[in-house]
Image 1 (cartoon, rainbow, N blue to C red):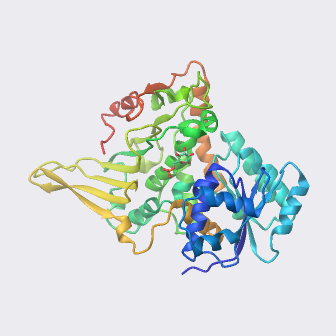
Image 2: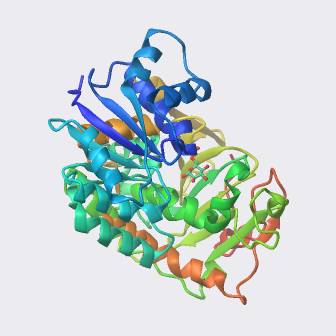
Image 3: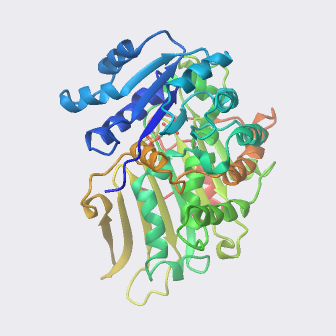
Length: 454
Ligand code: BG6
């Protein structure tokens, strides 16, 4: 078992949706499995009035958990401080609650406009040794993300900054790197000579629910494509890193991101946006909103390895199925006995599998399926539990470095800017429960491809 370092976790935005839905459950699971230091503490910070007792009560009422000794012991780790973060003395009070001899961790599960004031406040209160965890969205375009990174960088060195993309905590995505680089079979065919296209789909069945106000300012390209789907693409298409070190992997991802062709008006050709029917009637959504709840983009990389290979990315809400997967579609071999149809599919959810479609004789194809969950004897952790334990352990490999994040924004921002222009094609309405805007079919059809069925 890995060492269990002691820590004081300052959780900003402790009563927010993410904290209650993901972070506290993840911390509880880590606690219940004995993965947290016995003295480690979680200090929730929020605007609303409250104290340890009332906050624990709130967790009791909100979180699904198993009653019993583990839950009670977990609650004893949890504290609450009500703080007005616009007041500088709020930070001195916080700093005093942190034990001087343990690692402080500040998790900013807040709106990004609080990132800079909170980091400044923490540093000025003497907590510049803290690790800082920044939740997405980290800005809303390249300029705002650069601004946040530069300001946060004035108070904390890069080696203490953990930028979360929770898809990097998903085990099937992590498996892709050993699959590609530690097997003899894949790398020799992993290039434009053999690959016809790569398709990445992250589909959700739910709509925006109670997050209308946030989502209407955000849209699918910012919410999913700029981060989760680009990270999936990086793992699929980056060059072999010089080593398995955090920075070597991040250098390889950065080089790939920098190879992506930037679209401006070409966005009209390579990017499609859609909106599910009924979206504008959702709570806190503008009745005339042009926000996209579905985005599909054909990405092009100018790296020699991928010359001419289309990367199709698509993501949306209110779609037919909840799934996340990467499909590498190979060119046909010169088949001697029937058809050739090699295709490698890495499924992140709902299943965690890698399947390879092969010609099996008699004109038939078959699937060789690796069930990743069944492979590992250990409990499967949810992404947030993995990532929190990585922060606690001080390991940076599963977090985005500043230059990577900015390269992703440099790619996404001109598309977003084009979509702001009145002359840009409006989002196409698609029915709830479908595969998104029909116009996305034109992206693949232009190259003689189709979106692959599941
Ligand atoms: C988040 C987005 O980053 O990812 C949400 O803000 C989305 O809109 C979520 O629902 C999807 O995550 P997962 O792990 O359920 O696929």
